[in-house]
Amino acid sequence: MGDADGPLVGRFAPDLVWHTDAGPVRLAELTRTARPLLLDPTGVHAGAAGPWRDRVDVLTGRFTPADAPGDDLPTALLLRPDCHVAWQSPPDGPDADGLTAALARWFGPPGTDRS
Image (cartoon, rainbow, N blue to C red):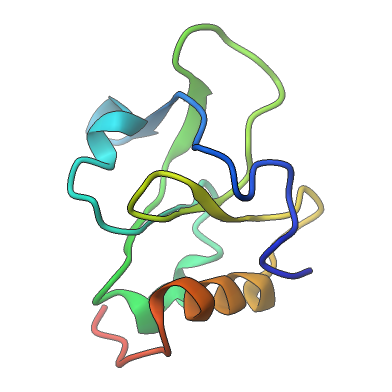
């Protein structure tokens, strides 16, 4: 899998609600900082994103649509600061190679993992 895979890649991020232990928050609120953002429902991609933590915020939780329930929710998403999807995890499992390729493409070479 590469960083150009996934039906949402290159598109503006869908209107979603992200649920954490602290409660629900709309995607628009999460992106107000204009920092890259990895939304990782399973937490399996956080390790691969570690070397970019100085530039990319990583959140675990779960998605729901903002307006209505649905079954066709995205897997993990990497969002650019302009809220376009830079990478989407494939539905069949983790894709650390695709994620690291997208992170390097959009946000430069890996740095030191400070997490």
